[in-house]
Length: 74
Image (tube, rainbow, N blue to C red):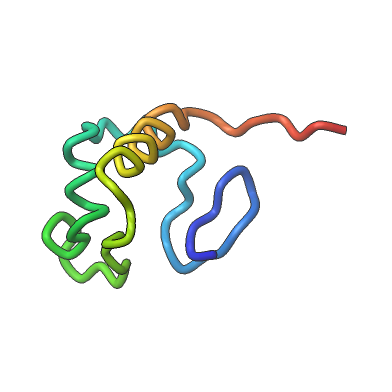
């Protein structure tokens, strides 16, 4: 709803299509999910308090893998 991925989604947050090229570690991503303003001053992103550590790691792994736009299936 807030971020775009492969051309779909919102425009409030940054596009995550190439997040994996930004050089952020899994620890950085998880820390950011837990307390966004501590990692990105002025961030309006809410903390993911409802996600378990396992799900936070899975989300970080997914974002680390985002290195280029995927082709749409026809």
